Length: 265
Length: 259
Image (tube, rainbow over all chains, first blue to last red; front, side, top):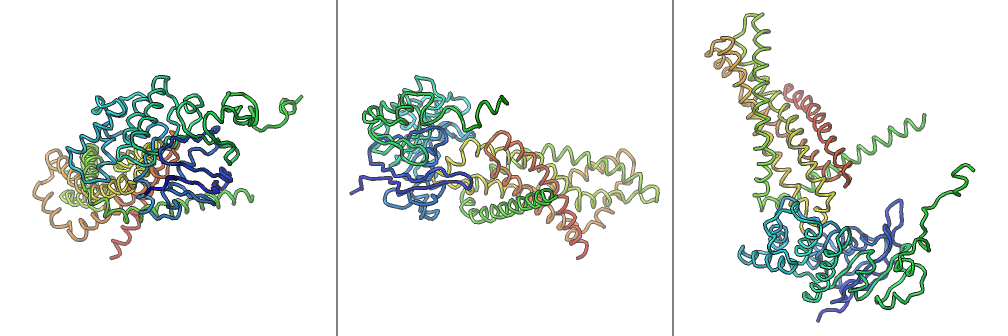
């Protein structure tokens, strides 16, 4: 029997020598759910994905994936955990020297001994799921931003992962592509029975399909809840974020001296 | 005054740190090599890119270097009445020094920069991170095949360079200037020693191959993931590789001559 909780973050702190990013983060991700992590630019949203994937180690606290503490794993253990994960990078991160077909086939070839006929069927099925079966011969440079993101999504789910992580999946997309990606995230999550973790700051799209949302600010979880709960929230930070208010707890101006003194008046 | 010394110390510390990081990358590559050898087709692909595609520049340069050697050598040797020794001069200069050194300098400019730019851009576009997240080691899949391709390619290119250079020298000395063909080849055959000259030249090109390839790989792998970062790393590859080749050449030559 699989545990319902697939990723859990406990008292996580992380920072670089010159800057503390997370002070105390606690999050839980349940199987089958689409969970969004939101917050302003530079608040450490993507860093959380990298901590879950074991690319960096926390300063204190822990990230547990499928019952295993990520930072305590050796290289082999980390790679075993990563086989349960798929990740969609902000700009797709497709291998530029491989065709669309070869990009999607890459993880299958690396981790299985399947014969070419089966690989072909699998790749075409994954590409069909994102609507790009007809583009399998194209090179990444021939794709639009939205198409590249969809190919990267097909590659991320090539091995039917338990966890799919999305780093800013909507950044720089036109409204049609954005709608397509939103739909695909939900559909693929439900079809694969996976858990989706989405890092984003696009409020409208995320609130429309996410099951649960975490807001990060100042290195902690500033607010959490379902989209309907958060819409009713009276917390100033959440209100500022949801309603795109220019000024509030997150100031418009970067920390500076008095304006008058800077102008020499 | 203190700031001056502080800056020197900081710069030196940075250089030593980078040298340590490059050495660590070298040993990481070695540890991942068995994994990489299982898919030797990746290394063969890189041999094509670094070796076969460098052939044009190597052959053309070697031919001109050989012709210039033939011309310069003849005009100097004839003053002492030993113009027949031109074959030996051309062959020894190429096999001992110019073959390995010029090949390594051309390799750094042609293949080294391509390796740095490619890996740097793969890093900047998150392709290496994507690979890591797919539980595939970028060192085993990307770095190690390029490393072994560089090591295999460099001695081969240096041999081709020396061979074509000798042909260039022959073209100038024999058909154009009129040096006796028999003397050209027989003096070369009599005075070029296989174990001393050719093997030493091979060892040099092997060492240059390791140095140039590890520098190119490290600069790419360590490049800041920005356009400026990659362009600076590419420049550093050429500068560092060229200086390393010339410095190592002196060290190796002094060892070889003292044996």
